[in-house]
Image (cartoon, rainbow, N blue to C red; front, top):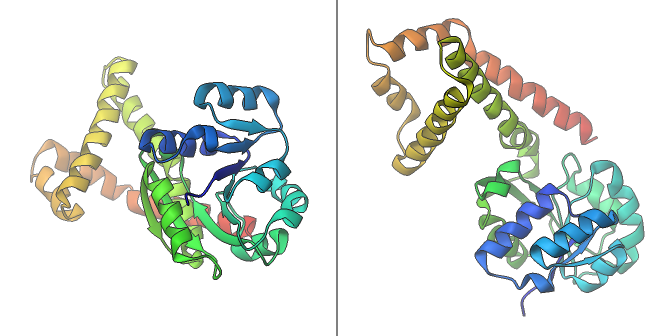
Length: 268
């Protein structure tokens, strides 16, 4: 029997998952229940996706078999206090909340409920997300398969150990902002060279998108790819000389390290 899906919260990440479920056609959205106390948002989701919306998390906990925890980190404790009595060994809670470890979630939601922790990223809203999955000890293989199937409709998934989650948070969780910052830098550089802003952005965006697509499809070695484009004495080589001299890779590594350290701090 197919698991009935529920959501504690109806934010942007939750909406991205609903979009993926809708696109995959694996669930009747009328059977999906979302608990959202902010009524304008609840009405918006009900109208846009025809999901069932309720105002209290208790109702969602009663109706759903697999429930995505998609509230703000500061609201998790309050939600857990309300639904804990309703969570049995038959229930699966999938947390997409940043910075909340499985041990912390276990203390909040109790020993009975099966738990899976997920680190998603914003790109799932474009069906190109990267989601890391970490099951608790009492989660079953069927649980992992279910979550991977749902999130796989919105991009790529990887089952990892929880010790890797700070690095995942830095690389793919915070990564979209870093990636956009690079695109912004390239577009602004294009403007300084005389291009119109909209043209510069289009060139930067499509170049990054196309390169990522080619690298994924071809499986090319990154170093060999760079060397192939940056022929000696050419334009790319001239630009690469500047990037290497600036310590660009060290800057990126330091950026990720700072994000990972902050993730570890928030998880305490």
